[in-house]
Image 1 (cartoon, rainbow, N blue to C red):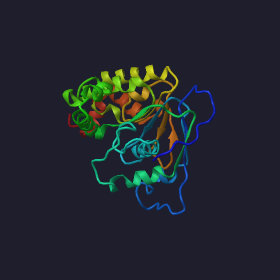
Image 2 (image 1 turned 120 degrees about the vertical axis):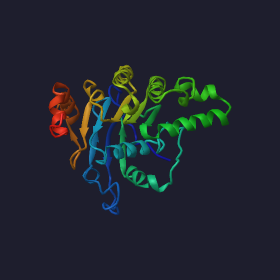
Image 3 (image 1 turned 60 degrees about the horizontal axis):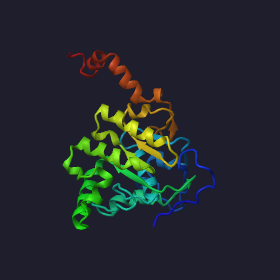
Image 4 (image 1 turned 90 degrees about the vertical axis):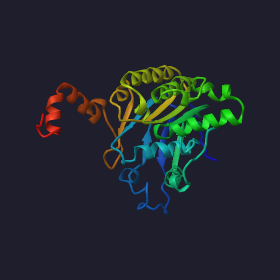
Length: 266
């Protein structure tokens, strides 16, 4: 059973989660994944000063690992879901590294969340299967599907199912961890997701921690952005991210980029 650290006796006017700190044991093996990652080795304290926090970085840097460990410690399932959706379709060993990291974290809450969800784009198909299973086995499709738009996520396109989840499930408020939520969303629907997030952030009791590659989502105003591209977690301004700079420069002069990429063959 995962535990929440004691909440601080403060009036909530900001994010639910205040800080995450590492407490590496003397027996921690820093030659094994995920502790072998430079970012994890040097991880100390992560502060969450705003209701929306982004983690960015190339694949393999450890950004998703950090999110998974926070989600695991907070009591969410390894493959995503709420605290009431906790299942695994892979062998236990697949998640042992992340769970080991989670056990060496301390989460300090300003207020314990009443609800929340860990959204993983790569395992959302498995979540949809599990919800269908609950609808069949429990004989209550209406109840099972209610937080997801009233019907099976498999009866919607990939992008529609993502947006249906965000509109219906996120609209309940709470503590949300999203790993690459833009994966099936068009640019227009990424803007729709930003509207949903913004509506939730107007009220106390909602917080979003998001790993993304999307320059659109990263533009969310007043968000905290952490770069995972070095051996230490670094706060970074939106305009200084590669996501912003590469996208902006490409759109300003796509021919120059394409000539460079294709060795002047066009």
